[in-house]
Length: 207
Image 1: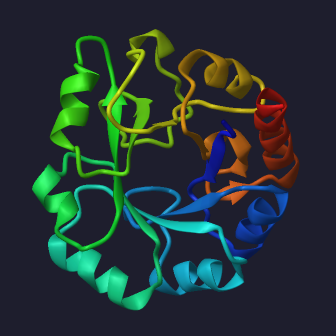
Image 2: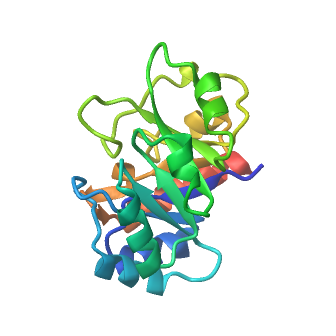
Protein backbone atom coordinates (compact mmCIF):
# COMPACT_ATOMS: atom_id res chain seq x y z
CA UNK A 1 0.00 0.00 0.00
CA UNK A 2 1.28 3.45 -0.91
CA UNK A 3 1.15 5.80 2.08
CA UNK A 4 -0.57 9.08 1.27
CA UNK A 5 0.91 12.43 2.31
CA UNK A 6 -0.87 15.51 3.63
CA UNK A 7 1.00 18.78 4.11
CA UNK A 8 -0.98 20.79 6.65
CA UNK A 9 -0.91 24.43 7.70
CA UNK A 10 -0.36 25.79 4.19
CA UNK A 11 -0.59 29.59 4.20
CA UNK A 12 0.89 30.57 0.82
CA UNK A 13 0.09 29.69 -2.75
CA UNK A 14 3.73 29.05 -3.61
CA UNK A 15 4.02 26.52 -0.78
CA UNK A 16 0.91 24.70 -1.99
CA UNK A 17 2.31 24.51 -5.49
CA UNK A 18 5.65 23.19 -4.24
CA UNK A 19 3.95 20.59 -2.03
CA UNK A 20 1.79 19.37 -4.90
CA UNK A 21 4.71 19.31 -7.31
CA UNK A 22 6.79 17.24 -4.91
CA UNK A 23 4.05 14.65 -4.51
CA UNK A 24 1.69 15.66 -1.69
CA UNK A 25 -1.74 14.07 -2.05
CA UNK A 26 -3.50 16.66 0.13
CA UNK A 27 -2.97 20.09 1.67
CA UNK A 28 -4.54 21.41 4.83
CA UNK A 29 -5.90 24.93 5.31
CA UNK A 30 -6.25 26.05 8.93
CA UNK A 31 -9.44 27.96 9.69
CA UNK A 32 -8.71 28.16 13.43
CA UNK A 33 -7.97 31.77 14.32
CA UNK A 34 -5.78 30.94 17.33
CA UNK A 35 -3.38 28.97 15.13
CA UNK A 36 -0.20 30.64 13.81
CA UNK A 37 -1.10 28.95 10.51
CA UNK A 38 -4.57 30.49 10.27
CA UNK A 39 -5.62 31.54 6.77
CA UNK A 40 -8.16 34.18 5.81
CA UNK A 41 -10.66 33.43 3.07
CA UNK A 42 -8.59 35.44 0.60
CA UNK A 43 -5.46 33.47 1.44
CA UNK A 44 -7.38 30.21 1.27
CA UNK A 45 -8.63 31.08 -2.22
CA UNK A 46 -5.07 31.93 -3.28
CA UNK A 47 -3.89 28.49 -2.17
CA UNK A 48 -6.79 26.61 -3.72
CA UNK A 49 -6.55 28.40 -7.06
CA UNK A 50 -2.97 27.24 -7.72
CA UNK A 51 -3.51 23.60 -6.83
CA UNK A 52 -3.48 21.14 -9.73
CA UNK A 53 -6.09 18.37 -10.14
CA UNK A 54 -6.18 15.37 -7.78
CA UNK A 55 -4.74 17.20 -4.77
CA UNK A 56 -7.29 17.06 -1.95
CA UNK A 57 -8.16 20.40 -0.33
CA UNK A 58 -8.75 19.89 3.39
CA UNK A 59 -10.33 22.52 5.62
CA UNK A 60 -9.19 22.21 9.24
CA UNK A 61 -11.49 23.39 12.03
CA UNK A 62 -11.17 23.44 15.82
CA UNK A 63 -14.45 23.65 17.75
CA UNK A 64 -16.06 25.98 15.18
CA UNK A 65 -19.53 27.41 15.21
CA UNK A 66 -21.86 25.77 12.72
CA UNK A 67 -22.33 29.10 10.92
CA UNK A 68 -18.57 29.51 10.48
CA UNK A 69 -18.24 26.18 8.69
CA UNK A 70 -21.18 26.96 6.41
CA UNK A 71 -19.76 30.40 5.62
CA UNK A 72 -16.36 28.98 4.66
CA UNK A 73 -17.91 26.22 2.57
CA UNK A 74 -19.86 28.88 0.73
CA UNK A 75 -16.72 30.90 0.02
CA UNK A 76 -14.01 28.33 -0.85
CA UNK A 77 -14.00 24.96 -2.58
CA UNK A 78 -13.00 22.25 -0.13
CA UNK A 79 -12.95 18.49 -0.71
CA UNK A 80 -12.72 17.24 2.87
CA UNK A 81 -13.33 18.59 6.36
CA UNK A 82 -11.02 17.91 9.30
CA UNK A 83 -12.33 18.48 12.80
CA UNK A 84 -9.46 18.83 15.24
CA UNK A 85 -11.26 19.77 18.44
CA UNK A 86 -13.94 18.28 20.66
CA UNK A 87 -16.69 18.20 18.03
CA UNK A 88 -19.40 15.55 18.41
CA UNK A 89 -20.09 12.96 15.70
CA UNK A 90 -23.41 14.69 15.02
CA UNK A 91 -21.72 18.05 14.53
CA UNK A 92 -19.12 16.66 12.13
CA UNK A 93 -21.67 14.82 9.99
CA UNK A 94 -24.15 17.66 9.50
CA UNK A 95 -22.43 19.48 6.60
CA UNK A 96 -23.07 16.93 3.86
CA UNK A 97 -19.33 16.46 3.25
CA UNK A 98 -16.78 13.78 3.98
CA UNK A 99 -14.77 14.44 7.11
CA UNK A 100 -11.90 13.09 9.16
CA UNK A 101 -11.76 13.39 12.94
CA UNK A 102 -8.59 14.16 14.85
CA UNK A 103 -7.88 12.73 18.26
CA UNK A 104 -5.07 13.76 20.61
CA UNK A 105 -3.63 10.47 21.77
CA UNK A 106 -2.62 9.92 25.39
CA UNK A 107 -2.23 7.05 27.83
CA UNK A 108 -5.61 5.65 28.87
CA UNK A 109 -7.56 6.78 25.81
CA UNK A 110 -9.49 3.93 24.19
CA UNK A 111 -8.96 4.52 20.47
CA UNK A 112 -11.19 1.60 19.50
CA UNK A 113 -14.08 3.15 21.41
CA UNK A 114 -13.28 6.60 20.02
CA UNK A 115 -13.30 5.30 16.45
CA UNK A 116 -16.65 3.58 17.01
CA UNK A 117 -18.20 6.94 17.95
CA UNK A 118 -17.07 8.50 14.65
CA UNK A 119 -17.95 5.59 12.38
CA UNK A 120 -19.18 8.01 9.69
CA UNK A 121 -15.72 9.59 9.40
CA UNK A 122 -13.49 8.77 6.46
CA UNK A 123 -10.50 8.43 8.75
CA UNK A 124 -9.09 9.04 12.20
CA UNK A 125 -6.17 11.46 12.47
CA UNK A 126 -3.95 10.58 15.42
CA UNK A 127 -2.05 13.52 16.91
CA UNK A 128 -0.05 14.15 20.06
CA UNK A 129 -1.92 15.26 23.15
CA UNK A 130 -1.10 18.75 24.36
CA UNK A 131 -3.23 20.42 27.00
CA UNK A 132 -2.67 23.90 25.58
CA UNK A 133 -2.74 23.37 21.81
CA UNK A 134 -4.77 21.58 19.15
CA UNK A 135 -2.02 20.18 16.94
CA UNK A 136 0.89 21.80 15.14
CA UNK A 137 3.13 21.47 18.19
CA UNK A 138 5.87 19.37 16.61
CA UNK A 139 5.43 16.80 19.40
CA UNK A 140 5.21 13.08 18.76
CA UNK A 141 3.25 10.58 20.84
CA UNK A 142 3.96 6.98 21.78
CA UNK A 143 3.09 5.01 18.65
CA UNK A 144 2.74 1.89 20.79
CA UNK A 145 -0.60 3.33 21.95
CA UNK A 146 -2.09 2.71 18.48
CA UNK A 147 -4.01 -0.59 18.42
CA UNK A 148 -3.19 -3.13 15.74
CA UNK A 149 -6.47 -2.55 13.95
CA UNK A 150 -9.03 0.23 13.88
CA UNK A 151 -12.33 0.36 12.02
CA UNK A 152 -11.22 3.61 10.34
CA UNK A 153 -8.19 4.41 8.18
CA UNK A 154 -5.42 6.02 10.23
CA UNK A 155 -3.82 9.34 9.35
CA UNK A 156 -0.72 9.58 11.51
CA UNK A 157 0.36 13.03 12.70
CA UNK A 158 2.33 14.61 15.51
CA UNK A 159 6.02 15.45 15.36
CA UNK A 160 6.70 13.74 12.06
CA UNK A 161 9.66 14.77 9.92
CA UNK A 162 11.98 13.28 7.31
CA UNK A 163 14.10 11.61 9.99
CA UNK A 164 11.33 9.63 11.71
CA UNK A 165 8.49 9.18 9.23
CA UNK A 166 9.81 5.92 7.79
CA UNK A 167 9.99 4.35 11.24
CA UNK A 168 6.50 5.66 12.01
CA UNK A 169 5.05 4.12 8.86
CA UNK A 170 6.70 0.75 9.48
CA UNK A 171 5.36 0.62 13.02
CA UNK A 172 1.85 2.03 12.65
CA UNK A 173 1.08 1.20 8.98
CA UNK A 174 -1.17 4.25 8.52
CA UNK A 175 -3.22 5.03 5.44
CA UNK A 176 -1.62 8.49 5.37
CA UNK A 177 0.83 10.71 7.20
CA UNK A 178 0.23 14.36 8.05
CA UNK A 179 3.03 16.88 8.57
CA UNK A 180 3.13 20.59 9.33
CA UNK A 181 5.93 21.90 11.55
CA UNK A 182 8.27 19.13 10.38
CA UNK A 183 8.53 20.73 6.92
CA UNK A 184 8.69 24.40 7.95
CA UNK A 185 11.34 27.08 8.11
CA UNK A 186 8.98 29.16 10.29
CA UNK A 187 5.41 28.67 11.47
CA UNK A 188 3.20 28.64 8.40
CA UNK A 189 6.15 28.95 6.01
CA UNK A 190 7.02 25.66 4.30
CA UNK A 191 10.54 24.67 3.29
CA UNK A 192 10.84 23.05 -0.14
CA UNK A 193 13.90 21.00 0.80
CA UNK A 194 12.23 19.66 3.93
CA UNK A 195 9.09 18.75 1.97
CA UNK A 196 11.20 16.97 -0.64
CA UNK A 197 13.09 15.02 2.02
CA UNK A 198 9.86 14.07 3.78
CA UNK A 199 8.18 12.88 0.59
CA UNK A 200 11.26 10.88 -0.41
CA UNK A 201 11.41 9.22 3.01
CA UNK A 202 7.79 8.12 2.62
CA UNK A 203 8.39 6.86 -0.90
CA UNK A 204 11.42 4.87 0.20
CA UNK A 205 9.24 2.90 2.61
CA UNK A 206 6.71 2.24 -0.14
CA UNK A 207 9.27 0.78 -2.55
